[in-house]
Image (cartoon, rainbow over all chains, first blue to last red; front, side, top):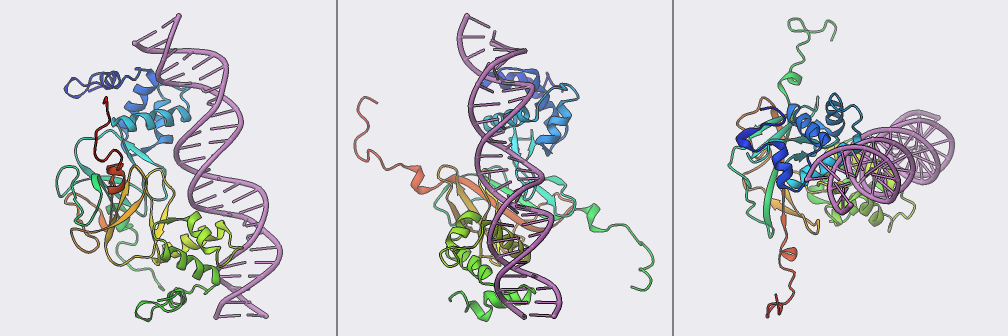
Length: 155
Length: 155
DNA sequence: GTTTTTGCAAATGATTTGCATGGAT
DNA sequence: ATCCATGCAAATCATTTGCAAAAAC
């Protein structure tokens, strides 16, 4: 599964075509970048894509990410106090857990079911999607692995 | 339950004291503003609070809101493509539904239980909170209430 | 050839910060 | 009197927009 050939014959190019979008090198590079590093920020995506297309602009990346997200080819995650992240995993209903110490984001399977996974009992709205964002401390941040044996002297 | 006297004897002033924060008129005005108009933006809070304290600055409101949120006296909601909102309802575990048409935010009771209401089955993190944001179409936006009897002629 | 997309620069919107003054303790 | 909180201005950070040139179709 390279940039051009993808799962079940539905290549990035094919999906772009299907949405009347032109298949440009920058769009393919952005898609490849998002796929290879999930939960990346726009800046990180731009940086990654620039290894292929050095003249690719951050602003163009923003335009492309916004467009592809609107088309449903990408999913946008907006963690508190952090720029937006993007991922290609759409379709399967999974959620995200963010470590409040290091900021790392982890995919977590939905414990309930497929989207919309949760139906609020008390709502006058017709719910289309339910986004769940867990916040906690990841395994690495939980125990700093410092002073494993003796407590700090004098403290 | 005015600004000074509140539920179970725990007034805003008392809570500020308990957190070693000084009881200033601007903090009380901000708290009153957030309570009286839930899901208000920082700008709306500032505007509301200025009816009492006309010289209150938006920047001060930002500082106060950030501080009180960190203390746990306020809860911050960050809807996509919209400035942050604030509310005083903390403690009870409720979530939020936002209408993707008009942007209105509605409180919805958690269908599962108290915080953390959902525990992901597949996560290496220790989850502290689970925030759920529903997106959908509210009752008012669903049916524009136009042409209630006859279908549009010629369509 | 026509129309979308990109690159570039500048603008916008939300929020944060530095610093001197004012106000609560 | 002390020290935190506010007002004010400027800065920052993420993202959007306008427009001409470049690239797909």
